[in-house]
Image (tube, rainbow, N blue to C red; front, top):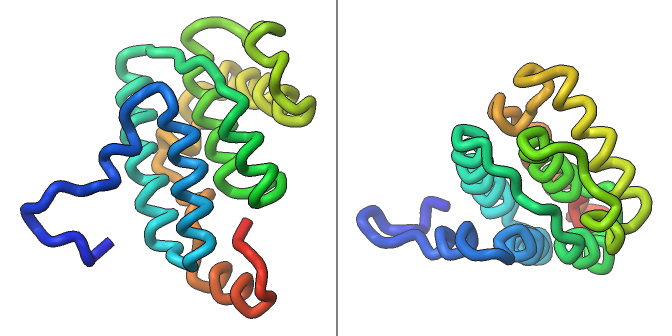
Length: 158
């Protein structure tokens, strides 16, 4: 995001505030995918990684919301990198407040609900070692080759 002039306020910071911030992330990721800007997608992940780490430090649990997953399924399909990031985001922070309740997950697609529960279990067992977001892994970043491959197919990056 080299185009943001030094000393000016980054407009992307508005995405990391408010209750709907992970839905904003899903929508911004989709826009980055549509206009073929993997740098934007990766910058978004980096910003939300910082939010995640802040929540880890304060042991804050973020209640899961189904809307980002529904949006992604509608526009990008399932099993996308951003979907994996969101699952890890919610599951990683859930270790501070107990297991997901049936009420929390009742509006989630079955596969996402199961993935959230399984990832939470792994976070509890593995601790920090299994936390790819906290360990600054780029497992959800879009590489140039992935972007070029998707563009050649005429499709979107997942």
